[in-house]
Each structure stands twice: as C-alpha cells, then as structure tokens.
Image 1 (cartoon, helix red, strand yellow):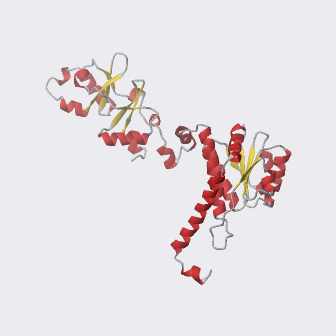
Image 2 (cartoon, rainbow, N blue to C red):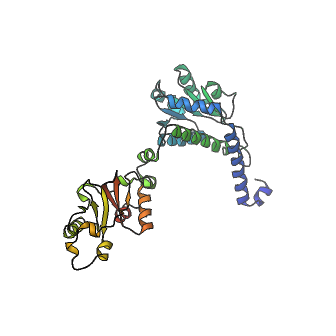
Image 3 (tube, one colour):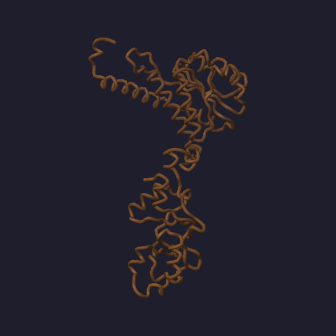
Length: 323
C-alpha cells in the first residue's frame, strides 16, 4: 500500500469502493435487454430444475443465486463444477437447465459441465463479462456483464464483478417470481421459520376457531351471554343474526356501560355494539395486531362473507412473538 493510501481515511476508501460498485450496477442495469428476456422465458418454460455453478468467488455468488431462486418459486440447486466432473452431472436431466458463472468465461473447472450441456441439449445461461469467451460461446442464453473496474486498490480482487453477478441473479429471480405471480403467501410457505416466517404469518394460522369461539344469538338473554363470555375466557362474545352473520359484539366494556339491576333480563341485542370489528383470514397477523393496538381493543373476530370463522387475540399474538 502506498504512503498516500495509508494517509487516506478508511471511510473515504470505503466510499470510493462503493461508488465503483454503484457505477458497475448502473452499467449492468442499462445492459439488460432482449437476451435477459429470452433467458427468463426459457427458465419459465422448463419443467425441470435450475442448477447454478461457479468456482471460487463466483461459486459463492452461485450458491446465493440458487438459494434466492429456490426461495422465490424457481426450483434451483448449486452444483460444484469439480463434483459435477466426478459424477454429479448425473443429477442434471433433460428437462433441467444450467446457470454458469465465470467473470473471465474461461474457468477450466466448468469445461466438463459446458460439454455435457452441449452434448445433451441442456439450456445453458452463462453469466460472464466476456462475450468472446468459452462460456459465452457455449451458452444458449449468454448474459454478458459489462466490464467495470474492480473496487479494490489493485483492480484484481473480485468486488465490482461479483456485486454485478449477484445483482444479475437477483434480477433473474425477481423477474421470474413476478412472471409466476409469486405472492407473499407463497413466500411464507417457503420461509416458515425465523423472523421472516413470523412476519408473513396469516391470521388463519393463529386464530382460535370452532368450539373456542364465544358466540350467542341476538335474541339470547344476557345471562346466557355472560355464561358464554365466562366459559370461553376471552372477555367478549360475537352476536349472530338468524342467518349466522356477525351483527354485533359484547365486550367487558359494553357490560360496564350497561350495568344496572335488570341487566340479566335484557337481550343481547339491547347491549351489543352494532359494528363489530373484524379481519379476514388472509390478513397478516402483524397487521391485525397493529389494528388492535391502534383501536385499543384486545380481540378481532375473523369473518368470511359476514360469518365468524375465528377470533384472534392480542395475547395470542404476543405469545407467538409479535410485538
């Protein structure tokens, strides 16, 4: 490192590195066109799996691309080029495709994989910065990454180039998931664990239903309603009309407001609030909890076509780790 480099503040060096990578990403963004469209259409049309390959730093990027594709609706696996040459090529079938990464496009370890794809007519998406390279020439769908200076001081460590490869893989995954109509619900199914899975949990995964629901008819006596509230231990009861539709709710607050000697002789319709707050089974738990906090309530009935099918409580949300 030069004396001048030693004197330059570290944060300034970091800013320059990021600026170099941003410029690379700008060039990549401008380069996407028909070849990218054709690669996306080909992947969408394949019935099999995507195998993503690379060696060294490109191998690390390939692993990430495979993981991102798999988690967004495109079945994908990382295949190590060396292992592919020693038997793992047998995993790649006639309905599959290969995505191979090499900045130079001349990575020797990829040669057996490229020959295999050519021999068995396996579609090959090649990500490389050289359009005249062996990888580009072997690819049925070459995706050429624009040449851009690496962000390191000597211009050799894979930095800008790997960032661009990573972004190109993300662009493929996002385009594919959008074209497939991939939804947050699909995403939750692929990410059931951890904070992400919790964030995408739907109300119908946490709600109480069936016999746990506190329900009474609007013609029921308040003595019966109190028994229902007490037996279900949720501090409320949903009130139904003759068709089973939720038309009201009675909460502890409603009881206090109507506290008088003849309370037990009243009907549910005399005490209930006429606008029960409800949510849908497809709503996210986080959204339901935010609404309960915002409106100062502790329960939300879950309704489908006007009929109660469940109830979600603030306490259940908190016990599940939402806050």
